[in-house]
Image (cartoon, rainbow, N blue to C red; front, side):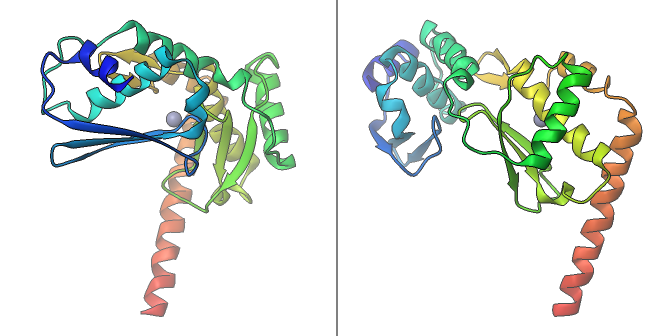
Length: 224
Ligand SMILES: [Zn+2]
């Protein structure tokens, strides 16, 4: 399979390579490493039963990324990569819904009613670390919205706004240009601004981040 993926992209390939399926990844994740002239691909075990064509698309995307400045490809788009994109955009249908949280689900429902006509399918919900640099994320492979604990006890509008942002990721998915995929497209940003009071909330979020960071720093000062 690797050879097939490589032959479609490169006329010459001066690297050796290996592929390993591992249980340590979240579903449909994987990574690629380049060590000297050796390429190691590690994919989530979930990929094993996915059709080879789709896996080839994933491998090609990873190869293009890691070899970007090292090896010139003969093409940057293949039908397998297109299949892989479609797969990642549709996989949420098959992802089991096992993670839930009442507060996050209520936020999702409020936003869904107000901005999506209630049409967005429910995702998994989890609280993440109390991170102030990453307030939320949406993971395609597991159909999971993760929200930072930093938003647990703040004005509910701030939580809803971050929830809205992640829901837009589920709605818009991503656009591929060449070997890069774009998640915050102009269309995405336009729609993000439709959230009631979005610029005020953006300001409040920024203020919150600054305040929290400062107080963290004070905490550390106390310790050292
Ligand atoms: Zn985002």
